[in-house]
Image 1 (spheres, rainbow, N blue to C red):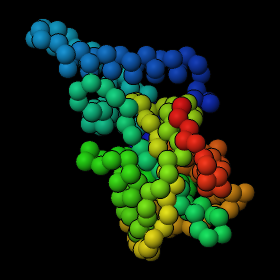
Image 2: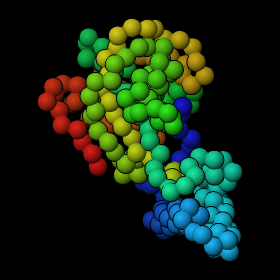
Image 3: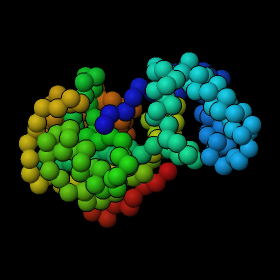
Length: 218
């Protein structure tokens, strides 16, 4: 399952706009937490109104309506959404990328579904987007999207990069990707930076070359 469009690009947005976005996200999270734990019906009305205002503010800064944002943000205590990315290499040491409908390229992956673990979700997403069967072997890194991808969503996103091994299958047409291809590290195509940056791809190459790689988490 692909990620939606981000709210803004931190590298080009003024600092004040980024601060406003952070405050809006915090306001929404506080309202959602209040809705989960409060016992007073009048307080609940106030928290619902605060959440509606926060969602409206997020919608003004995002390329999506408030109702879609509401649907993307889980009920209950607010936590980040999880995203998995699979690093698959061929015998020549090239990495597999998928061609997105946007025209950009990315590691196969997507949101972790409710009934999936990180490992099973990696395997499932690879199958759905590429038609390939893989094993999920080693965790390369766990990263905060806001810190590493230079983009902001109306919710937190944590990315899991996993080294995988192809064991079978072949590309099948699907609604998310138009083709798959292996690339050398110094000949990468135009990347979908909401999904993966050149630095994150380089990190996967480094982990592939190092059997003693230690998982990064930040």
